Image (spheres, rainbow over the protein chains, first blue to last red):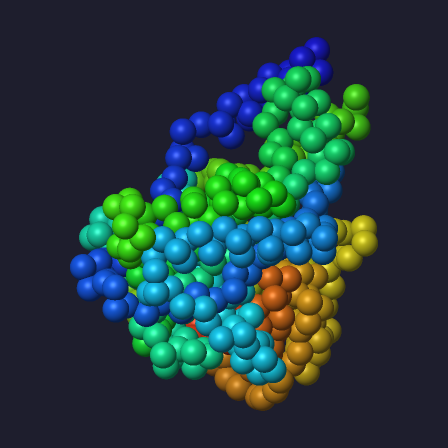
Length: 251
Length: 195
């Protein structure tokens, strides 16, 4: 009797978890940003993406995998080359930072990840929006920034904007996947296996304001494989506001 | 099977969808915090995070706790931890003692924050006497590195009244957010009263 009640409780809880309140947005443009100012003479500094890849243990803990991270770095690098060709000379590589500059770039990319996380959780995610962000949404305001210190980033004096990219993938271990299947079959509980977050944003290099962002906790594409990484990067560049210059006419 | 059900119910306890919305804290209104007699009057709008970080605690933020995290702890009694336990068996939280002196509070804050927030590092940069809630208190400046690799700075003000701890803390990334939002925290501290 007790067990059957527990099953009913678990089933109801599973239904709650799968309710439509989880619907969310994936992209935004700053309210006072004018797309039309972007043209072929716009210079966008592309920083080396922050990439983390690892395994998700049965208990859900992240365990980094250096080999997967290296693979993803190569694959995403190649996929970015495709985008560079589409957008032409506007996308320029940030200088390879050394010493203090390297630390600064790492810190900004980590901060960018935290800001993106907050944007998804507290402005995009309907079920968890902060009240002050709801007010912003009502007034069509999207106001997030990394601060004017971005002007100190290496190469910032040579460009108008920066493109920050961050991805983090936790691939479910065998134990995690087994738990996911067992939970689904026996008690109808949705246990997630894996995290696949990806964030890309255009940052104003004078103010640090986020002008455009595409961010999601569940992106597609296995970054450990070339095709998957290409899919991921394509997804990251969806609705990127710079006009395509490769003659394909695609946007 | 029993073990599996325990794991499954444990997973369900992790809320992916909050039970209730976060609350708007209106500028200019006197607000009671942390289910206590402590009140503050914010000068700007804040958000109160629905989930309480501890029994006698409350969390406010402007953009999310990763970017600006204000915590209130009030009427913390002898034997209480200020946060909810994270891993009681392996890393139990320290307990406040009514016999503690103000000078003991930086270490208490250090070990509490390190465990509850999972900081890689926590260092106390300076400790200074202050007045908080009209009583002699202590002001602590600290620095942390989180498990998200972000360096943050923080400020705490605390006092002990009749053997009970009252403390407000603020923590934000060193880049941009700390300097931007510290005055808002200081304004909250200056407005704090016991009703």
